[in-house]
Length: 353
Ligand code: PLP
Figure 1 (spheres, rainbow, N blue to C red):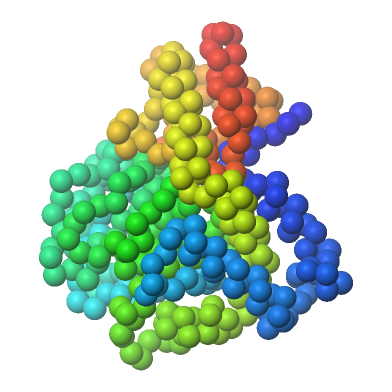
Figure 2: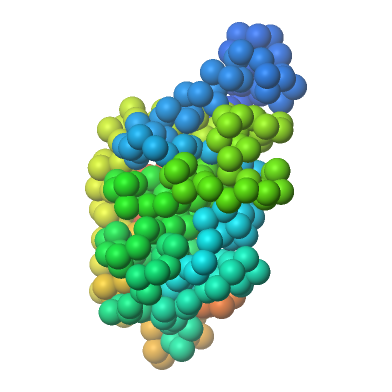
């Protein structure tokens, strides 16, 4: 039976990225050695990181004055590392979920933090709007896609100060005007590669703080092209394959179209099917993580649907414990066919009840 991977992260990768990685594990770039055992200082690996860097810049149309870094430590390290580098006096944050909340906590260890709004009052089921950001903030930080709760900010916020964004779970799913940002960071393990590498895009003229710990100083990694120390070679190699695949398919506008088509199909079924309902405000629905629960009166069918869907090849649709129900993650590598299979499954289950 064909399986469809709806995990929230680590998550589905394209057959191309997995196939090329498998080949490189056996024999990398014709060296007769595995990518797992070759020096990061070899010319063959240098070519990998250079091409990955260039493709991030090309796909996102990164303007002059920014650098792309490939770092370890996950997006969670960036919750601290980014403010350590960019928070000079004060920073503003919006609290839209667990990850935003964690980012706020870490920034407070560095300096003054203004929390402009929060949707914690309704279990993060909507995105706060109409808030004001202090004009003297170094930056405004937001989480573009709230992986756990299934809300997403698709429009670039206009708040009068430079933006910083945790784009971990919708990175590369649509074009972004990078010039509006001081920094963008994203753990690779949702839309780009396996766990182990985080992509950071930073405006280099903002890196003026001195005396930071070497490994936590963006300047270190800018100067050394992400090779101050041994980088996560294999994850970077797989990221490169995904980036090549995105380019081959036509870039981020195509990713956006695909994401929209898949999300519309699944939300359409959630709204139509009497057994299910969505969990977040409709205007804030995420294209990447679609959260839904059993409708009022059908709550008792929760586990039965989970088992039924599993028997039909749907993997990883259990909702996060803070929301319950189901979460179908529709990252770039999920084919439309996977969403059609899930919808068919929901319809069949409806017919049974
Ligand atoms: N930010 C977002 C939006 C996430 O979804 C996650 C993990 O799921 C994180 C941050 C934390 O990432 P990491 O596990 O790479 O530290």
